[in-house]
Length: 434
Image (tube, helix red, strand yellow):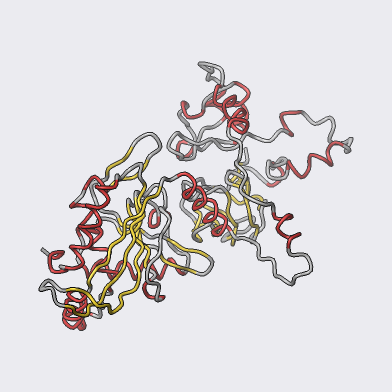
């Protein structure tokens, strides 16, 4: 039986994407692992691989299509011995065809099973897809079977008709009932004036309407939720950079032959990573009904790109040298600007850094990016009069930082301890190499 190729969920948070480009055409033979298409998520453009082998019988969604929902059928794969004549009405076409079918007498006698679309592809408890044929999904839905409990005998563990025909449901399908009730149980809170209301305010004024892309929508939704649901508090410190700037200059002269030039941001990443090891209770994330305390220091760094930002994560940053961190950060930032990062490269981490010092910003407050426990907002270094250790007035290069903290994970005194460790690391940079 022809197999649907579904729009994949290329990250845990992906709900829809843009089918940017087909890498195959109808009639092409593909094997497991072959590249089928390029998919644009809210963050990156990624290549989508075939899971099964067969022939591309029909492409249902043309390239360039935006807002394609996850688990929507985008093409049909034919197995050996099948032809395009075996392709029945597909679920992707069903919603559009439904109104016409009501007035089409030729379609009226069709059997309900033939016209009814297969249920959406199910997922495991961990969010992974369960691969099952459309017919197997339809039979499982009719019998109230949980596909997660069925072992597939098809290629690559795919669940086929024979696997579900002999199976029996152990209990009614409570999941479906719960899913049906979910929308009523989770009303959407008002978010402000509607688009029409705002537009009416500016009637008669010249403006350009800019449609939101997937990244902008995601940033708006997640940061609005973060600011509304995370109990933020803020800790501020000034950091004297003179020792760091001198040490950095010496290291850069020694690393010049290797083509490495350390930035102040590289030292900040290292300082935060080491501080998370010095205050391990802060190396944690909020997980709904519990806190997960991580062992390694995985530090996220905000990278501005056109239309939004990425937060690539430097894993095990406490274990890496300054030169290794610098090289990795440059690579991640370059690929972030090209939207070529894989999800595992910008998801995770426990703590983030947002540095606007290069733009001349003295200080600012950043929004915690869930599930992180905190984010360090870094301003520019400026010459200021300070009182030295000897009590004399002198001039120093001072950088202002603000640490935004999720109070559910980190209390005030604990947050102060973490920021103190960050400051000491930056004001005594040689200690970070010990």
